Image (cartoon, rainbow, N blue to C red; front, side):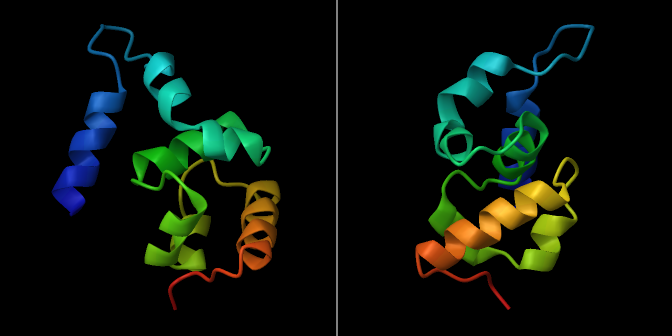
Length: 92
């Protein structure tokens, strides 16, 4: 599973010398997170970790999500509130 995530992360980046992020890739998969109002760094962090929708967060702990680069306090507030609304919970 970890190898798959690493592969997805590598595929998300362009192969050019500037190592810029492939914005088209993220735009094609981050609609759910964008609709929740998450900032771009938080959306990219979730996608890079293989989390594409709210129900995917059940597979991981809140502590693990907090540790993702780009995941700030506002993103955590939004995610926990939306999880509660959807009657979902993080893995313990």
